[in-house]
Image (cartoon, rainbow, N blue to C red; front, side):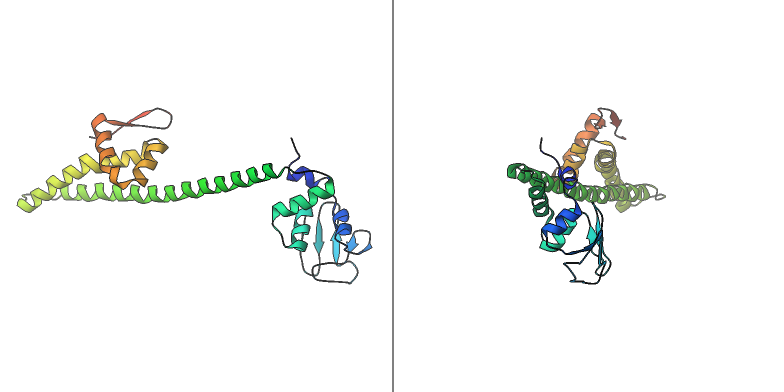
Length: 211
């Protein structure tokens, strides 16, 4: 298995990179800065693993040095340091690593969007339950319009709001994602949860849907 970026960085020292970049050393642990063109003695202080310019305040490890000089990304700097270290990198592995990183970021962004949608939908269901309970708590006697509102509140609460809230709060991630991302199936999912009387969690536990 080829060495990773951290292992490759340990194979090349800062002084070696400075010499390869033609930065003039003034004395031990001091050099001219090739970025800000500082020529006063001791502009850049460096050790084997880190460097810092006291004039332009650039600094870091061997990768940051290469990136600062060549204005490149990390992978280009990695290839540069690998060549100095005599390590041959497999381009296909680099491509796979880049694809894996992009896929991981895509999944993280999708999970974040889903979490935002889920929170918004849970609040919507909670508010709907509260609105129904306010209607049902209205003191009688009721006229025809109030009876219709009360009947509608019963339907919403029993057939939609509470099962939907249980789905969002306790169901497995797959069910929650399906509910949040596909509004056209919400009523059917809530009805199905109410019909069977429970939702199943990610670890297989059953959570009862309030009737």
